[in-house]
Amino acid sequence: MDGNGRWGVRRGIGRSAGHCAGVDAIRRIVEAAIRQGIGTLTLYGFSSDNWGRPAAEVGAIMALIRHYVGSEADRLAAAGVRLTVIGRRDRLPAGLAAAIGAAEAATAAGTRLHLRIAVDYSAREAILAAARRAGSDCSREDFSALVIGERDVPVVDLVIRAGGEKRLSDFLLWESAYAELYFTDRLWPDFEAEDLAEALTEFRSRHRRFGLVPAHAAAA
Ligand code: FPP
Image 1 (tube, rainbow, N blue to C red):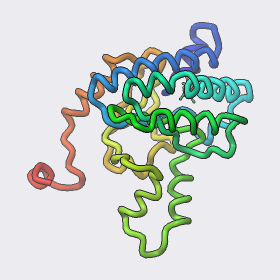
Image 2: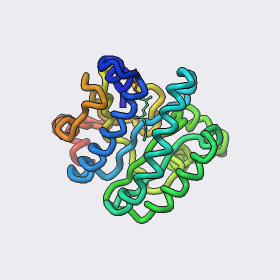
Image 3: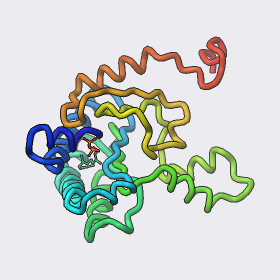
């Protein structure tokens, strides 16, 4: 969801207002994801490295997440969306972990879209935590389950990065081993259903070989 800050600064309303507009984009894109047949959508809401941002911006983002999970849970549940949050919960502001738990419980029956939001998330920390729990004879499948940490989560097919950045920034590193990468200059608050459709069209045109040669990849 890159570009919120720049979007707000360019309009002279500040970075936090940009994050606020970013939440409107989340609502639009969740609806679009359902319409466009996406099964699992993971949004990077706040990375563990984002704690180093100015306190006012961190506070604004946390307040927006708190408001989103509190106000959106019923609407998500009605739309058939299951919401889960990945990342650490022990460093979140008071009440946020409980609000997240309540939203997860309220939406647990959703089957149309699994919406995952990464908050205080670091892929490297998730991999490290899995490594600490895994025994020396842990299989790749079992290790994968430890890294992902929740049920029914497929590997990542497509990573969309908005805002012109061209890097992964500690996001779903294990799960993205064979993900297709799509970069767009569109700032996240300007990201529309059409942009999602364009990314999916581009994704469908890619030839995914998973390390195989074309004939074998098609048969696999
Ligand atoms: C990245 O853009 C965005 C963030 C670090 C925060 C995203 C947070 C929200 C949209 C608020 C609420 C979140 C949820 C999940 C309800 P940036 O700030 O790095 O933008 P820039 O690249 O223009 O600086």
